[in-house]
Length: 181
Image (cartoon, rainbow, N blue to C red; front, side):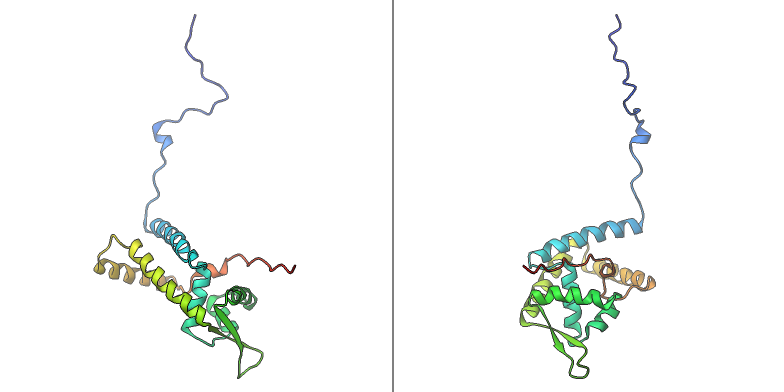
């Protein structure tokens, strides 16, 4: 009697060693995407401890960098429709980090300003961002960090990315609508 096991005809065919391992992705573009995704996730974790999202942080920095800018100007800088900025600023206003003030020059416009709480939050963000960068770039000495920054700035400029503006604002999900109970 033959006791050898017969292959299961419904099972997937056995793979050979060459089929089992696809080559690992290579190249600078892949590494930039991999490190970028890792860095973004870690940064989101850090700022979440402050009650913020990365989108909140970017908006706070932009408002702090140009106090009194209008929502429309902010929308232009972000490359989004003005109604999108209204929703994003609503979130920061609800957190009492940003306030809208009627423009003295054009009462149809609102100027954006950080509140004292917004300035404190931004101080916490600055400390978190410095720690984040130190952790992320721990493998590099100061000269290596400076060189990496220089190279990344050249690539960003060649790709015509707006300095200081994360392109993710164009793809952010809309904040959940407020429920009125």
